[in-house]
Image (cartoon, rainbow, N blue to C red; front, top):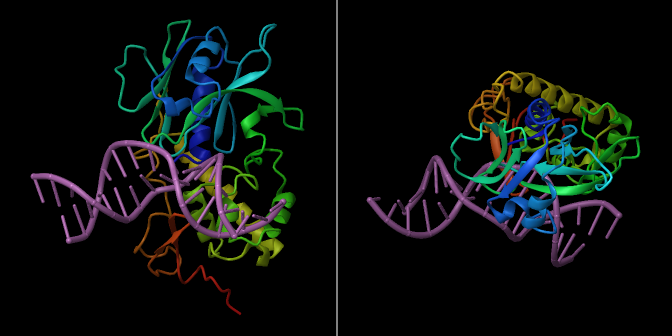
Length: 292
DNA sequence: CATAGATCCTGTATGC
DNA sequence: TGCATACAGGATCTAT
């Protein structure tokens, strides 16, 4: 599932293969692909041709391609979210359409095209105005409420710790709240909690500042490590989140490891249902009630 | 306002 | 074999 490191790999691919090119044709093949674009798929398709792509940007799990502004067009961006199963592929125009192709973007240089492929259709594309981010930058309007991510140079560690400790919810839920800190999904939440020896069910407001600082450090570490691995498994003409093969060899200590021995103490990793999904943890290293 | 839970979706895996 | 069910889960919506 694409979380911050996977999305960053895609962003880098888009920056390399799509930035500077001018869109010439857009096809929407599934209505859900543009459901977040309020004016509808026809409007989405008709407003993009002729617009050059100026950059490839990201905050948390959101990706966007700022479009070069001109006299007729204000600052706006092609915004994308991969959801659970979305892929943005750069492929030769003659490559056959694979299954679950939801949208196609062609360029006026007749080079490789951009395809949005999404089996479970939780992802989507839209065209949105850019607004100021309060620090001299811009971001798409639907992303304005999303917090900076831990790899953002302007991420404020002290503010994060304060905001986490202001919440009475379980710490895992707070980690997954994209308005507190963006980019963390179920996998990296479990991995960070395991490294921190924290049970995801611990109330956030009962953790001391040093504990939350340490947790943030582990969040950052696990993301940087995953990014370093992800950067190697892609070939050039293929901008891909290969949810199955590319990243499943990540060295996961907790996520998906039910029944396998904890890397620290050997106790079998347990799986419990939480927030309509699974949580994996070591029942010995990660106690719900802290030892006295 | 903060919080918790339901909901969207479809291919794959599992159970009877 | 075939059908039904569980599962994967990010973001948003609704209810309290």
